[in-house]
Amino acid sequence: MAGWQKRFDWDMMKINPRADYHVQDWGVELEYSYKEFEKHRKVLFPVQTIDDWKKIEPLPLSAPSLAEHLVVVSELRKRFGKDLPILMTVFTPLAIAARLVPEETLLRDHLRENPAKVRPALEAITETFVRFVRELRVAGADGIFFATTSWASANMITWEEYMLFGVPYDLQVIKSTGDDALNLFHICGSRNFLRQLSTIDYHSQIYNWDSSDPTNSPIDTVAPLLARRGILGGIDHRGWLIHSGAEEIRLHMPGVLDKLPRNTIIGPGCAIAPETSYENLQAVKDSL
Image (cartoon, rainbow, N blue to C red; front, side):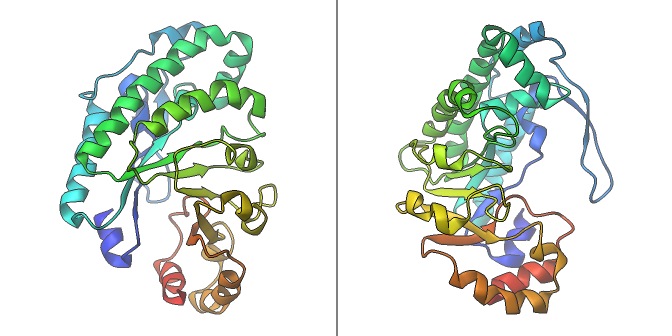
């Protein structure tokens, strides 16, 4: 992360941890990949049946993976001083719960079958990350990059279900950052619930989603809903950013910028592919 920031001098640092730091202390085990573009593989899951949710209890902040990432935030703050906004990546409680099972759809099935057996686990996850997020601020984070992963989407559940199993727990975590936090709310995936979520106070100054996905709202159509907030987007991270050449991007960028409202921070709609060339990223930056 330090090398990435020193090379490009981004306006903020969104810390990109391994995604499963959220769940390793609950017993998820990984087989680590040593290939540059291949993800780690999860090989052990603590929740296999609906009765296994009772095993998920609140974690102490001394739990190894959580403690490790608090050190990461502290070290990055020391390296970059107080002027660079640093946001730590934190998933929503529902998204964290989904990483405890072999398939995400199993959590959805359990919620529909017997939500009373899953709710205590969601509460334990929420309690853990409320405390973790408070400690992130102590470690030096200015706020969090709060990601829904695939859950705030009609591809996974209904809006009514997200209102029941997502929103109440989300708000506890995001509001625990404090009144002075700089938070970025990332509504991930296609067919997302951005419009519905924009009507709820998610304690976030910046909203981010994949506006290049044809099933999601384009920035210009949703901008009036977010007029008093910042929007991060404009870069088609799965399209021209990765597949075009650097010179093509320099020629393309003026047309992109002309279509964006003034409260837009230029960035991708989700994590960029690691195969994306540094030359292309530099071309975007040069075009600004």
